Length: 301
Ligand SMILES: Cc1cc2nc3c(=O)[nH]c(=O)nc-3n(C[C@H](O)[C@H](O)[C@H](O)COP(=O)(O)OP(=O)(O)OC[C@H]3O[C@@H](n4cnc5c(N)ncnc54)[C@H](O)[C@@H]3O)c2cc1C
Image (cartoon, rainbow, N blue to C red; front, side, top):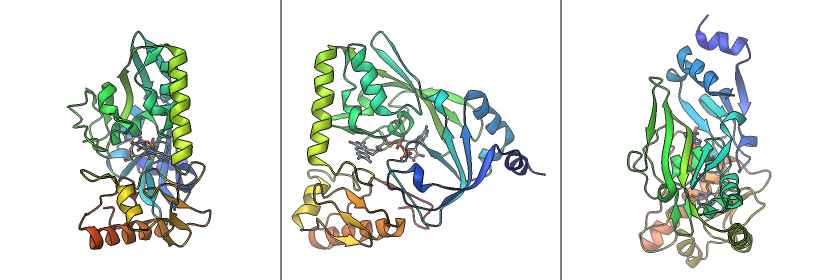
């Protein structure tokens, strides 16, 4: 019996788990294997079993930047449990486990009288996802506030501590590959005022509600902004708001958000992304690059 077989038969690794419910698009097929890692020891055990270096890996955060193919993901999905979800404030430093929601990082720092992390309030991802994606908005990116991240390499079991330059963080980019698990991160805030911070959180939340299609199935901005323009403005200028494939449409509220209905398939999402990208290229010569990540597709680019 292989290590994988015994982890499956003991119920530690689950098979054929639908991934749609774990993503904000709510579409897509199953993970061939899925493991919920509850604490650091369980993560070490997983590495020691060798299983995580044999299979394609997807570390799943809050699934807010992913489109999982309808046929699913033929590998091992790793989810970090609640013991990776803590947020602690020490002086002007905010430390968070990789599974902590970014909104919690924003609120905890404001509650502690700190400023600088409010931008996280409207990004519905986790700390691990933010490090991997260098998430950002309103002129601030994760790299501007990240002190360091603790990252486990699943291929050799080594834990390392990395700063923003080590991780090559730039616009929605890092060198965190699929076999590296962000375990925790610390962020630099500055002294602030709780009432002012709470007002800022409300302002950002209101702005999002007014300008983005909140409450719908989407994964945020579909395309990265090309230099000198926003993808939303380009798509809007071509009159593509409302363009539809199956049960997915370009949002009427924000053209760089593609919103899915409850019967949408991931293929609908992919086809609409390709159709919009092609139209933009034909009509403007600009090649848009997806910001959302495609998982389990033959061509993930
Ligand atoms: C309504 C809405 C608004 C959004 N607004 C913004 C915005 O303003 N700015 C912005 O940057 N993004 C935005 N996003 C996109 C998304 O929230 C961010 O990219 C977020 O950082 C993704 O985090 P996640 O935990 O959901 O990651 P997932 O979607 O689960 O995964 C994304 C990537 O991160 C990797 N990953 C996740 N956790 C870990 C980990 N612990 N270790 C290693 N890799 C990991 C995954 O393997 C995958 O490659 C928005 C999304 C939505 C739905």
